Image (cartoon, rainbow over all chains, first blue to last red; front, side, top):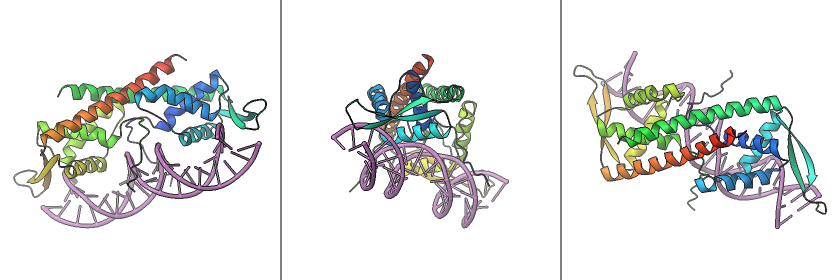
Length: 123
Length: 123
DNA sequence: GTATGAACATCATGTTCATGA
DNA sequence: TCATGAACATGATGTTCATAC
């Protein structure tokens, strides 16, 4: 009875797309959720894409569940009581494999759109 | 109270994407639903995208509701009882405007993915 | 069996609320 | 107030069923 619903393979899903960026951010610094969200927003705002915080958290939690990252608590500043959750790579191999998969999906999606651009320009 | 939910602006939705192709098909021939589905499947199968029939019908019905196309009945073949629904452009201006919008959305989505490809290649 | 369409189910994701420090 | 997270609501889309030829 495993009804995994089969995707039609149209374009990459936002969740997966975001995961690729999160892994990269986590690899290069010790960011926390909102920080990564702001970074993503800044990055894609000129292209009309503004992700929301729930989607970032859902992506982070999935990466945790998949054993790809781990998390720890930290104070936002020395003299602050505000706690933040920072992330570390837990399984570099898995992380790399997932990024590879995401890159493939991005390229495939890109081809779909490129094909459409060509098609529409003919008319 | 009309809360139209605001899109985050990630990538173009499949429904809208399909509409662009349907309009083009309808402009150039007198196709019926399944025929257009088969055409689309053939076209995108090499890229791993296989739309399903429900999505095509939903797109066609929306085009009808929007007054962009009209439909008529016809026999599949002379000596057949099988009825098919064929489509005609009803409002060429609206059709053109929608295609323009779709082309813009496709190009924007394409830029989002292109940005990602660049980003991922850096690591 | 083929074409159309609706109904149903579930996934993907946006919005709102809750909680802790 | 800020960061995190859950809950909730709905939009998008895949699967199944129904109907007419």
